[in-house]
Amino acid sequence: MIATILTALGWAKAAYSFFTSPIGRALGMVALAGLLFLAGDIHRARKDAAAWRAKIEAAEQARVERDATIKAQVSKDANARMAVLAREKSDLENKVADYAKKLDANSACRVTRSDLKRLRP
Image (cartoon, rainbow, N blue to C red; front, side, top):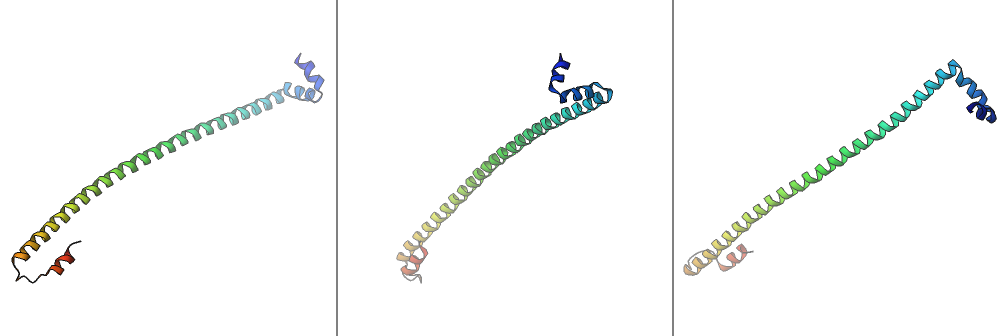
């Protein structure tokens, strides 16, 4: 059946007779092995590429999470420092106000009201 179909094609008769010979079978097996190797290599390359993409995406996600954590820590630290500075500013303003009250009580002091205005923000 196969032989009759191949003989109808003309050029296929020569190919059929070649692949039925021992050398043709050997070369056919080598060609088939090469095709299978190539197909497996392409499959493996795609599989490796997918694995690398997954690793890169995981690393990117880890970087984003790490950056968010660092940003939160820096923000918390900055807010704490700003609170300390605000407290110190308030303390200094209170000291200046207390000194201004003492200045009114003791007029012999060398600091004038204009000096105090320069000290206040």
